[in-house]
Length: 96
Image (cartoon, rainbow, N blue to C red):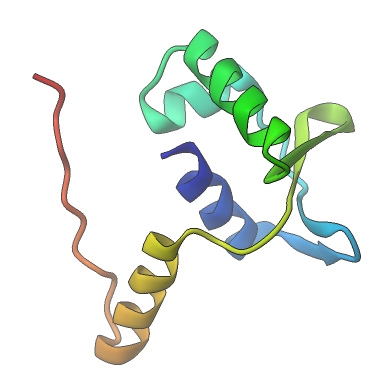
């Protein structure tokens, strides 16, 4: 979920750089947790994993640099929206 949200923000507000796409928004771990519906420690752990894998780099002022390609799920949503001129329906899974 975190990568999808970050790529969505990058698609909307990101700036392309030679190293990746920079998201010029002050996105703290706590704020990202509120957006994706997770606790801050879980977001911190996910960010650490994504950083170690080379998908994400922290920047000053709680900004982020996305590296590589967007997740396949996001590309599928964009293709759907382009084909039908409408946002793709989201499947919401509530925790049990």
